[in-house]
Length: 174
Image (tube, rainbow, N blue to C red; front, side):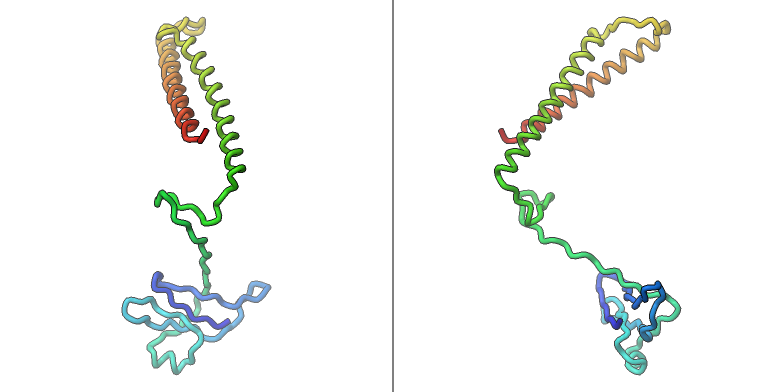
């Protein structure tokens, strides 16, 4: 396969060698590395003769396998209200489908809110205003204090979780 490649964004460019189905590399002739113009990357080619390569100051690349890595094409992005989160052009959703998604999201969040409120109620009852009942296995006062600190931290986490769930619910259109 004969290929010429010039990429100004890369200092080194790789070419695809013709590979046979058994994995061996077919001989495609000499590959030359020619110096690029000022500010451009070198050009790798096998489309010129040895005489032309000498005239341009090219060197032969020998002994190294040559590979081409082709990039993938990106989809065009639509202009969005927030430049930090661009949306793909084809991301439009039917209004009915979006309302259904919003309803499902609200139902899930409200269920989670109820669970978290129940958990917080239980934690506050166990905490008993900072004086939970001592358990039989807490003969050591320090283990009791550690459990009190754990309950207090769990209450703080649960309150933060409740606030986050309420913020998420507020973001969903009614």
